[in-house]
Image (cartoon, rainbow, N blue to C red; front, side, top):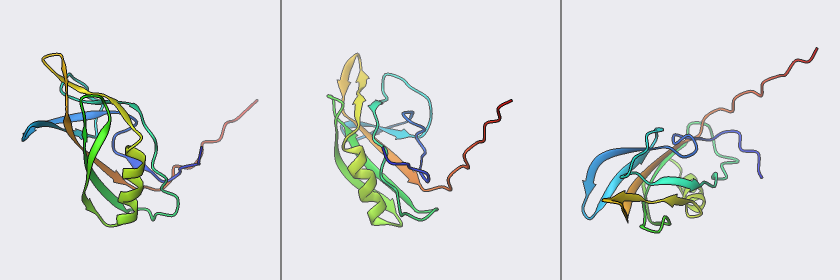
Length: 130
């Protein structure tokens, strides 16, 4: 596994926050919080984007649909200041798998927005031994 030292996926490894806004025939969710519920798809497999070589501060926001089977489809770049970063995020998220959102107990497709921002790496903590 690559050492990724400059990535903040505002999602914090698998959290979702619903915006409670319906988008045509699909529900819309926003990755960014630890809240979970029946109308929110929950990531069960997350692949971290390869962000090696991207500058701190670069951002990308991508939108996609988590279908009723938990697979990601229909990717769109909403905003980015680096198209290559957006491509790296999409390449990784295509490999994600979700427990899909449910409506009345039935799995449903849900539109999701994923913001990504490259942040400075946290320094490794030092352990003291006696």
